[in-house]
Amino acid sequence: MSADKVSVIDVAEFTACTANCFDRNLRPAQRWALCLIAGLALLAGCKKAPITDPPPAAASGSPHSAPLPSDSEHATAATRVAASAAAAARPSGPIEFTDITAQAGIRFKHNSGAFGKKYLPETMGSGVCFIDYDNDGWQDILLINSMDWPGHKSGNSYPALYHNNKDGTFTDVTRQAGLAVEMYGLGCAVGDYDNDGYDDIYITAVGSNHLFRNLHNGRFADVTAKAGLADSGFSSSAVWFDYDNDGKLDLFVAHYVEWSIETDQYCSLDNENKSYCTPQRFKGQSSTLFHNKGDGTFENVTKKAGLYDPTGKALGVALLDYDNDGWMDLFVSNDTEPNKLYHNNHDGTFTDVAVAAGLAYGEAGTARAGMGTDAADYDNSGWQSLVLGNFTNESMSLYHNDGSGLFTDEAPRTGIAALSNKSLTFGTFFFDYDLDGLPDIFAVNGHVSDDISIVQPTVKYAQPPHLFHNLGKNKFEEVTTKVGAALPHPIVGRGAAYADIDNDGDLDLVITANNGPARLLRNDNGNQNDMLRVKTIGTRSNRDGIGAKVTVKTANGTRLFAMVKSGSSYLSQSELPLTFGLGKPEAGKAVSVEIVWPSGHKDSISNVKANQFITVQEGKGIVAARPLPFPR
Ligand SMILES: [Ca+2]
Ligand SMILES: [Ca+2]
Ligand SMILES: [Ca+2]
Ligand SMILES: [Ca+2]
Image (cartoon, rainbow, N blue to C red; front, side, top):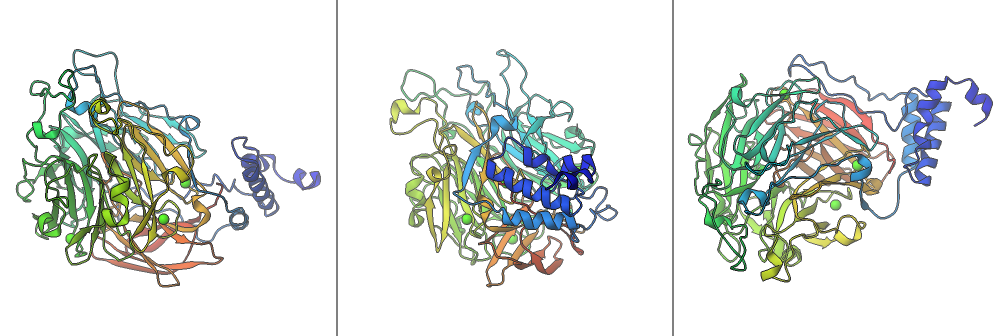
């Protein structure tokens, strides 16, 4: 561009337009593409910097009176130009997960409190949740921490809330958010329990759990006592869901075992030194179900709902509707006890049908060490299947849902069993990292015994994660070592979650390590394929739309099916918006979207353009949309 052209443009506008193209953190090709975008935008009369343009803010206030984001479907001339230039700059090359922890400013390290006594909880934590707590359209990160044991205190340990600065960096806002609360934390679950448009936080712990209500000003209030959700004991994973379809999110909290410092057991692998005991040495502890009464308080309905089970040693919980009857069911993974599939009876009660469904035991007929779990339709059948982590020498499970109430473990046939046999899997989930329309499987691994190699030399304490690429037709390929050097790095893995942290359309990862640092892994080049991202806003249904089932139909007849969910993985939760991979880029690609809400209401939307982030409100259809650029 000539100097004359620049001189007629406002300096502030010019700076905003070109800021991205001078970013030294970007690769030369990326800078060139951004400079081209900036130049075109300038010629079109630049209004905003196209790449840092945030998605529309979500609505605030009550579900019915909430001011909704302005409809930005009719993009300005500048963003249209930016979008077409961004399309031209679609990245190419191999997909890599790049470790950006340090450059992003994430400095969290989990403190297990271990000091040599080998107390059981030390080896179990901790989790991580994605939450967009300030509704700016960028996913923030909540990392859960444990703490020093009484009598062995060397300092305070807090969870950490990292605010997404929209430029690849995060700021620790824990103290100003009111979350610098010390507890022996393990897991978290994110959901808008009071339907005010702002997501709230539940943290599970050994001892009292905590409910933090979002105050809309960047701060949270600890409302545990008022809500009646302390739920003391040894809690693990948790999930927000509306089991009675009354429009208010209820809470299921998985519990592990009866444990206290006083009742801790002595175990040893080498008959010389104390080791962490297996759960067989402890009594189980019943998980709990809390009904949301709608006035900020909850009622413990565990027994009334038929969920009281003191034999359970639950570590993971996946929300699903396995029989597609419109009522939320739960899959609960139990460590060394049979897993549970709780069928929702539509009357406030549940019935465990895991044995008949083929989910309670492993193929050998014994209970395995069920850890983290997730449900998704990985084969585009319209039915939600399950993935489940187990102990070393037990292999992961991939339970395929055949639609008649029966599940078959496809892990042996797909090769996943053999590939995961030496792994002790904690966090695991389905996510479509390459956006080809077939959900892939991610798992983080790490042993519970730091001294395991003494007695089992082939089994390591720190273990590499697994990334299994879904090839379709019930075939998976392990690609862990093909997606860059960062992913195969062995860690004592525990929590794991995904979100599109940089709003470029592909899914990034955060993983946690026991008594170690959390890591943020950015998906680079995953957005070579087309995608559609969908955020749901319930009105009659719960405000987050948790339980909403979204079917995306492409022109060639492929149906992609996913459900908005809380919980899953291990002690963790991924972002609430859904991501649909639409395969190879095509100009002008459009899909139809059908949403069945928990209330039973159905919204059908046709001719939805690919490569957008759309917000859909129950009964209204699309209320906000923005194109997804492809800076990486
Ligand atoms: Ca709220
Ligand atoms: Ca159901
Ligand atoms: Ca895929
Ligand atoms: Ca991304």
